Length: 140
Image (cartoon, rainbow, N blue to C red):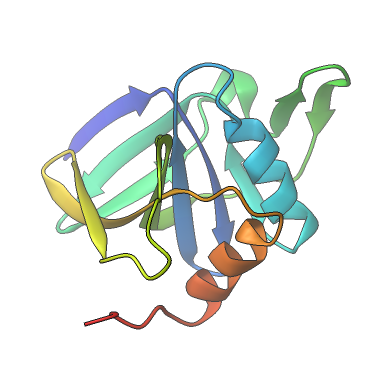
């Protein structure tokens, strides 16, 4: 069992977790709050504990910040929180340039996971929710 804390935020939809990566100020908390407004549940904000069990990565919050999410200009908000298996990674440091992009992957703790890059579109959180609830078709 491998466990480590990552500079990332995470939410879940059902049993599917999404890990949001990005530099400080890139919008991790903003995206998570948008997803939460669409029905996602908070796992962790800004720091996420990841644990490998077999071929799955489980995410949970560090105890000290469990149930807390910060929004700049508003403050620290409270929320119910959960843990989940990470099924999708969002990389806010990379922008998607293609209309119908290829499927991207990233490796975290030795596990390969599907990855989406930032999309500058107000409906992007809704598209992420759709992927988590159902799936995404390979464009090829």
